[in-house]
Image 1 (tube, rainbow, N blue to C red):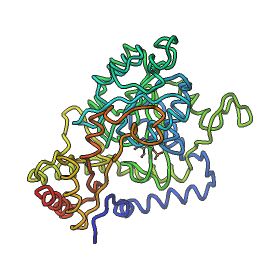
Image 2: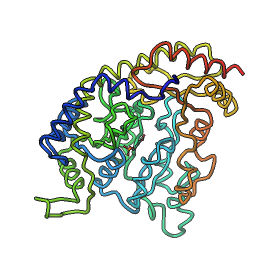
Image 3: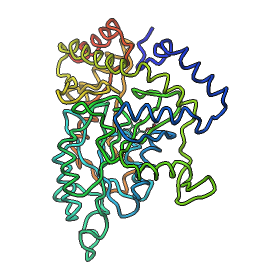
Length: 401
Ligand SMILES: Cc1ncc(COP(=O)(O)O)c(C=O)c1O
């Protein structure tokens, strides 16, 4: 039998009765939308992260959209983010008419590089793309006579804790504070991780996560959550989640969305929470075992275990020497019936959808190089030593070709 990339069946066999009991309760009370499990889940997950408020919603993408809407993000706003992420991170910025401004990543963590962040803000403020690559809307030279601030005003950063590893928040936060910018943490992949013992879901003005089934904590459909310590912001998020509702359902005070989480998904997540902390430990031990087994691989860079952070290991990702070397590893994985994935084969600034930003190839060299070299191996809490040995042998074999 081939090795699954993620294994939700083994997980289900552990929680089957809890999931069924939870779903039966929902079927019995019949409150399919905003039933009592929603508030129960929000309370449990807020406590798990140490956040004051949590708001369950329809997906990780909608969580980001709600958070940006609550910040009144719109045309003329520049929102900084990484080009080495899933498209949703930048998509929500553009959907609101604001402009994504990309910042390159650190090759060791694949997360936003704080030094580049500083330069990008400086470039935005001056409208000078010689300081750092800028989208065409932000270049003073393209709008002569309008002055540097005529087009785009930097408002905030969406950081992404890629593959589950938190960003370097002690380096990022002072930069944002000095510049008066907000931080929205895209923790879609990092729910369950820790930065200096603290959940990244509490390290921004707002944080969002995803419960897509493949995520470290996944439901059985789509789901997401926003976290904040700001009570006023939470109230706005509550209103935005239900069509900008005011005092009641037929009082509408702002434009909003229908972005509620189904009660059934909350019941599934509550059942999964009973084993989630243990699953994060198992993911960490799977990653350690991979790192040990892959010591014999040639020119393969394994992920680092950083002293101050614990990843949620949404993905276990390696770097090959170059594109050809990676292809040789893929050939070996294929021959040995081992699945793999590439996150992400094309950075966002080179995707057609963002071509209007006018970034050229070479603008973010680290992201571009990583997309040529990176690949991810099967990662889930139930991966046994025997299967890990098989995966590692296939990587080692391919790396030596
Ligand atoms: C970094 C990142 N942001 C946002 C999302 C969007 O989450 P969802 O698929 O729940 O809408 C994802 C999901 O893959 C993600 O990986």
